[in-house]
Length: 77
Image 1 (tube, rainbow, N blue to C red):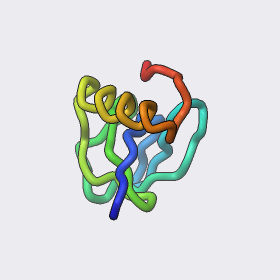
Image 2: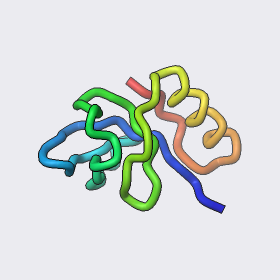
Image 3: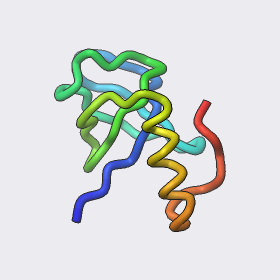
Image 4: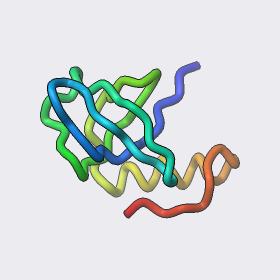
């Protein structure tokens, strides 16, 4: 089973970027979502952003993950 995690894009440059969730920053490849810009929410799996999410969809996924205890309680900004 694969699990995609919503992350907010902080930086974007030449197909690479940095994503953040609950204060944790990670490198994220943005090659598959070239339209992603800083401030956007993206669905990340294995370090690759697979799609751009609207904030409501990101929150819905984060709420489900909180419910099963996979992530902390911090709300998306």
